[in-house]
Length: 100
Image (cartoon, rainbow, N blue to C red):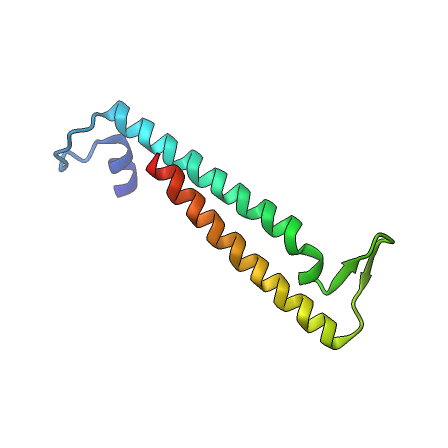
């Protein structure tokens, strides 16, 4: 209920210097920015480490399981680093877009 009041400007408790049209514009910008950052994170996550996170590899002959435990541990560690980097990149992109 409070979220609706804040988004529509209907609470009556606010004293701001931005009118309803400006608030709606800023809300749209925020939602688009969030959506773009989320999409970027999903793309990086899906393309960057999908096989590695599942313990598989594709050496141009199709996806196959990694059977060596040492290699599997190394590849999964690398996949975790890619996931963390994609999350951090999406946060940075969101912050940059929000500042524009």
